[in-house]
Image 1 (cartoon, rainbow, N blue to C red):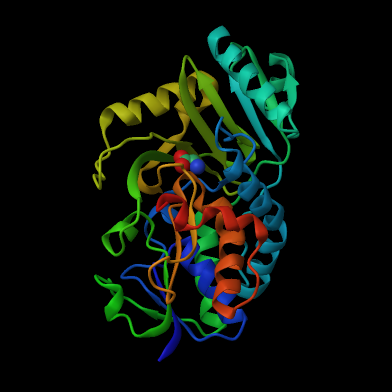
Image 2: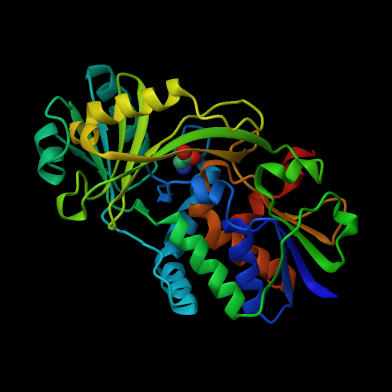
Length: 354
Ligand code: GLY
C-alpha cells in the first residue's frame, strides 16, 4: 500500500507529491489527465501585491510567504527535472486607461502602501518608457517590482518530471469516493472537483482566457501588465518565448466550459485599448479554466476535522500557481508529522465549520 495517495494532478497535487516523495514517502497521484485542468489554463502570475483586495489580508500573508519561496522553488524544480519553468522577475505594471480607472488605481495604491507593500506610482510617460507598447492614452500606473510570473505549462511539465524522477507513481483514473482509496493518508487536491468527494465549500469559478503569439524579437511587452480599462480588468502576461496570455473573466456558471464570443471580444477589446499592437498578433488559443473558489477566496489547507487520514489542499481560487510552494511544503510537513509553515494555520477547514 502506498503511504500517500494524492487525488488531483494539478500544480498543487504535483508539487505536494514531489515534496512528500522528497521526504521519503511513497506517493501515488490519482488523476485521469494530470496537469490538464486549471493549472494548464492559468496565466502563471505570481502577483500577491497586484491582486490584494480589501478584507483579504490573511490571504495576503500566505501569498507573500509563498512568493518569498518562489525563486528557490523555481530553481529547485528546474534542477530536479532538468526543465526550465519560465520564471520571470521583471515585475508587474498596473495601468489605468481613463480618469475613473486612475481614481480606482490610486485607491488600490493607497491600500497597498498602507499594508507596507512595495509599489511606486508612475506617470503615463514613465509607464511608456518602461513599456513602449502601451497606449499613449493611458492616464498613469503603479509599478509592483515584487510581482513576478512563471510559465504554468512549463511548470506543470517540470513538476511531473521531478515527481517521476523521485519515484512518484501515477494512476490515470478518477476517484469517486475517498474510502475506496487504499493509502495510509489521502491528500485531496482536486481543485473545483473537491466538493464532489468531500463536503467542502469549493465551487467552480469560470475564467475565459486567450493565448496569442508574438515574435520574441519584437515583443509588445516585457513584463506583466494589469489594466483597468474603462472599468474592465484585464491582464497581459508576456512569455520570453513569444506567448502572450490575456485574461480573464470571472463567472459563476458551474462547470460550464463554453468559450463565448462576448468574452473573447471583451478581453481583446480591453487588451487592445491598453496595448494597441495586440490587434496584429496571432490568436492561437481560447480556453476556459475552472478556479476552485471558496467563500473567503482563500485555500483550504490542513487535516480534515472528520477524518485524520485526509489532508486538504484545495480551494486555491485565483492563486494556485502562486500558492504551490507554501502549500506543498505544508502538505509534506503534515504528512511527515513536522510543523507546517506557521502562516498556513489560519487556512484549515475549521474556519468554515464553526
Ligand atoms: N490569477 C488570475 C486569474 O485567476 O485569472
